[in-house]
Amino acid sequence: MSDGKRLNNNSAMVGSTMATQLSAHASPLIDWPSQRVPTPDQPRLFINGRFLVQQVTGVQRVAREITTEIDRMLENGKLCADITLLVPPGPWVQRLSLNRIRVETIGRFRGLLWEQVALAGHVKGGTLLCLGNSAPARALLDPKTRVAVMIHDVSFLDYPGAYKFLYRLGHRLMLPLLMRRARAILTVSETERARLERLVPESAPRITVAPNGGWSADEAAPGPAAGAEPALPPPGYGLYVGSLSHRKNFGRTLAAAIRLAREDGLHFVFVGAAGKVLREPRREVPADVADRIHFVGQVNDPARLSRIYRDARVLLFPSLYEACPLPPVEAPHFGCPAVVSNIPAMWERCGRGATYCDPTSVESILRAMREVLGDSPKREQAIAAGHDMARERRWSEQAATLCAAVLG
Image (cartoon, rainbow, N blue to C red; front, top):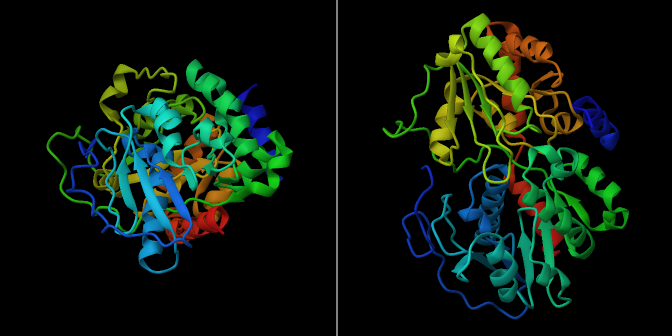
């Protein structure tokens, strides 16, 4: 299926730092809650903590923010439940500070084997919350265990060529089980809800939409750069943040960055990587602009990411398929206007807070970028509208909606 046809299908659908070496036994980055004896009338919730040992993409960021907000709800008396975060052994990649949620390291395995074997054996009699597109099959099939799962998107169905074979196979096998056996299904946009309902119509009553928040107020503030970080160009560069993937439109994003470097003298920074599950895209950069195209790799440290956003002139995010992306909301928080793809999910996410382009046309991408690159009233309007939009995207609202669906 061509990119244009996929985008049309999406419209019809809506009509609608660095890796911190930290284990659960190393305490500098986590405040451990005091031991509490749960009362019999409190619901028991187990959170799948696999996200803490994975490379940080949007899925892992969302899981961290939701967990943090649930802990805050417990602390503020807005939620009464006995909650345990179950994590695999090994180093954590994200920082996390919890005051009320207990943290327990279980099992000997990591990855998918940990989730399917170790995790399933520790959640009987309670509710298991899985925030990353998968859940243990044994728990799903156990009538005594309630499973709630967040399905962020099903892009592997529309863009199979962007993913490696084993990832596609695993999720094709897992998705029907999730859709039919999970007691509660969370997703992040009305766009994606419509997609899921078309796949399995009988799942509709169990699907709840809980949109993602934006930049978290308790993220680390920008500070001085660490010496080991790859060098960045001076402030005022173009920026892309996200996986280097076909479904993210990496090829056209790179083509636009090369044109801007050559024709406008703009430096352009790419933050992100292909990771283990994505097919590595080609990224050939002509020699005449090689000094102005910068690939800095994956950035897991929020403080460093905030510096990158703060110093960028404009974010380019012309993705072909999205559900509820983070960068187009995070960048405007720092006064960096966003140019995004004109697809339904992006309008649902950004509204009037972004500048839109046709993601299948490099010329359209360039026109939209140049609208907000120079000093002009259009740029000032884009910055103001983006800031207003970013302030309205709150993790607390997502966590409250999720808890009502899972524990209500």
